[in-house]
Structures are given as C-alpha cells and as structure tokens.
Image (cartoon, rainbow, N blue to C red):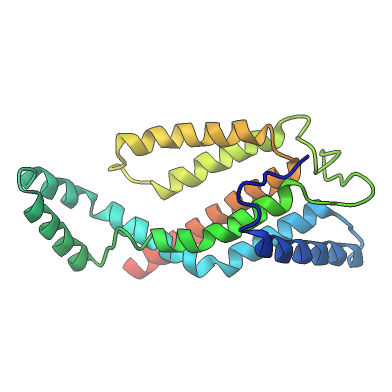
Length: 224
C-alpha cells in the first residue's frame, strides 16, 4: 500500500524515530519469546500516551473547567447579546474567576499532533519485512481487517472517548451531532486503512479512556 505523500515529508523525522522505536520494541518481543509486530505497536502506543500524559491531563482539566462554567457563559451571552464588547469583557472576567481558559485545551492538542501524524505515516505503509505480520485474528497487519472487527472497535472506542470528554448535561447540539458523526467517519476510513494503523488508533483510544477516567477520579478526590 502506497504511503500518502501530501505531508509525509514534514513528519519524516518523527516517522524515522517511530520506525526505529517500533523495530526495537519488536526485538524486545522476540527476546521475550513472543515475536509480534502487533504487540510492538500496542507497546509503542502505550509508551507515547504515557509520555504525553501531562499534556493530556492539562487538556482534560481545561475542557472540564470549560464545561463547568457553560451555564454561566450562556447566561452572560444571553444577557449581553446586544453588546458584544461587554459580553467579551464579562466572559473574560468569568474565565479569570474560575481559572478557565478556552485556549488552554488547544495547546496540548497542537503539541501532540506531530506525534499522531508521525505515527500515522509510520504505520500506513510500514515495512514489516519478509513474512506477513499476523496478529491475533489478523493475517496481515499491512492489509485491512478481513472481519471488520478493528474498524468496529475504532468507531466504538472513539464514541466512548468523546462521550467521556463531553460528559455534561450542558453539551450543545453540535457536540452531540459530532459524537455520532465522528465515530462513524473513523469507522468508515478504518475499513480502508491497514490493520496495523487501526490497531494503533484503537489502542490509543483505550489508553485515552483509561487516562480520562484516572484524571477525573483524581480531580473528584481533590474536590472532595
């Protein structure tokens, strides 16, 4: 399968690093007596998610803070809808008072994006070498999942992760629509991607769900 080349050159340095680490993790599985590129992909995904967890935690806390003040924001927007300048001033005062920042959740995401794209280009056409790299029910990680289990899991875990991130009764209609459209879209494109790439996406979602649960648990303890 040919690698998409629109932005591949930009992320080539990250791709090279990811390739070296993935091969090293495969060598580790060989040493442990269970040679598997599928297991190496899972280990690499977990390693990346652990390394970027401080950024993920900051992003989750920022989103939670913004969700918390949604009712107050709506009241201010309704009250000052005819005076945008005053409305912005009041919103800024609210952000400062509650320690929320609508932009603070974007920065961690932007920092993580090169890593995500690097993994995408690494796994899209990864050279597993020699024999077909099988894993569990997958006969070949470089080809699509023949029984569509991974595409289904990619859609299901994307939905669950989004639901946890917007776990609020104040979630707007647009967010609810995205919670339906995005998992369907991810599941659909996963039908066309090599299984190794979809395995990475599913593993990333699962680790993200666990990290979200842990972060929420710690925040609830501190609040109590």
